[in-house]
Length: 241
Ligand SMILES: NC(=O)c1ccc[n+]([C@@H]2O[C@H](COP(=O)([O-])OP(=O)(O)OC[C@H]3O[C@@H](n4cnc5c(N)ncnc54)[C@H](OP(=O)(O)O)[C@@H]3O)[C@@H](O)[C@H]2O)c1
Image (cartoon, rainbow, N blue to C red):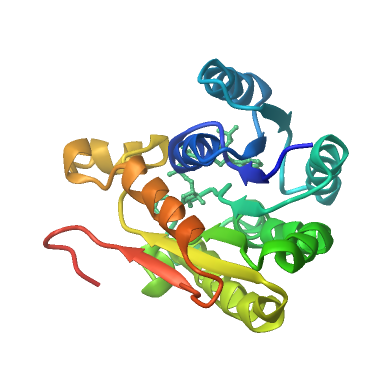
């Protein structure tokens, strides 16, 4: 059995893949989850090539059964969970008059509902890790738009604000058991999700790097049990909240 184990959702590209890499470097056995099987398998293969213990479970995390399947696969393989990274997310822009219920539901389901379900399914293993070393950690990828709602990304912003509130609630509910939670709140990060912004004139090199966000997770891993960092905001020069 691995000494430390983690689940990372949305691990097939961007921020999630960078966080998975950091966790691999730090010696964590990994279960990776994302929607599209081939893309996730390629990411898992890349990490295995770097020498990490990686298992991948693909499928839509908008489905409760898929969340359960990811956690069950992880439990069977490792029997413990020290770090949970709830990072899968989807953003679909629309002016308020044009919001489609299907897209509204998709963003709520992936960005917020899946996080609640992952906590529910994982809390037993997280509490066990917390009892062992007081440093079980849940990292939830929110967004700077969760700190200050954005026009045309109103639904996305609302889901990400929900992630921050849920993270706060989980710290109040679970931190005494050695389970800490942190919401990451980045501005534009250079990932596939921000292709629309690059097309709109924001240069990739002016965006936050996925490694910047992932390094913050390494910092969280190193905190003493006495210290909780409930959220980390990543801003860009000239674009301060
Ligand atoms: N990039 C930014 O500027 C930025 C800023 C703030 C916050 N964020 C947040 O950061 C997180 C990661 O995004 P990213 O920027 O790294 O973009 P990304 O590279 O597109 O990653 C998104 C990840 O989420 C997965 N995902 C999406 N829908 C899913 C579903 N229904 N079921 C399971 N997995 C699903 C994707 O898998 P598939 O590709 O297979 O769908 C992919 O692995 C998201 O929560 C996003 O909201 C991003």
